[in-house]
Length: 364
Image (cartoon, rainbow, N blue to C red):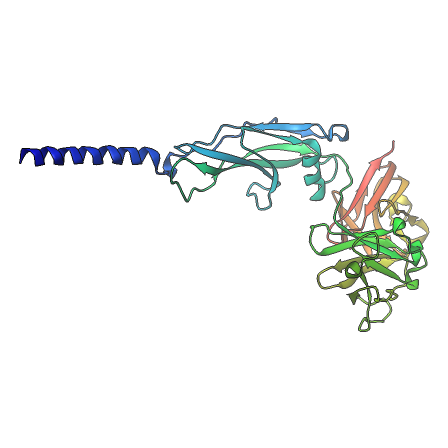
């Protein structure tokens, strides 16, 4: 009987040791024991410069996430232009406690969102920590998110390499080295841009997805294409047998093309683009200052001397299509733009119909 009693005590002891061993080898994750990483604060403001494009904007440092048990961790640094992070941009990932970010990456985010060069803008940053490995059987581990830090950033002017489709036609001698472009400003299937056909729009053009002739990326008119002059939209077809697009006859066109539906939409067109207003001598047609089209950048520019006053932009020296606005952004039929006397280089970008912009660069 004593032997049986001793045997029972021994079994209980073995089970207790085994249970303790299992607890150590298979720890249980407790979210209450976890703590998110902490980002080190940035300087209050940064003014970016083209000469520093490839240099560090900042090296973001932070404390390690604490999961309450041994876990491997991957960190992702995000930024946003709104405190609620409705739209986020990933700046880098690391398994270490620092992530370097170069100046041009920060600058391109601001310029891509339509922030004007030289305009101070608040940016928000946060760090996401994700468990990438475990010691034991741990599951259902949520991302840990740091508190937000922020700073004010002033961008410089830069060209943006948006996805694009190619416009080729009689206007450029059917030469792909001289193509103009429609751009996807949201990196989706929608492409827009302002094209200068000179006097040859009616001679025909096509759209291609590459700087060459590939049937599935060669879009033109088909047997069901509307042939109405100045059609507001036309259905294109793909293939080497598609015809030239010959619905249009003005010089400048803002088109939107959807590579999914193959519908080409005309947003607006005109033959001249000018500045008008008492800042350039008056509001009648004798005072229109014609702006020049730069085919390289697909935008209008002109150097002009202003008097104190107001000005607007308009097409064909007429008020049927005019633009006004403020803070570098134009709207159709928008308000007069107030200017101070002086010599300026005026630049207008009509490529994105949803965000038409202007710049007034002092030359004094």
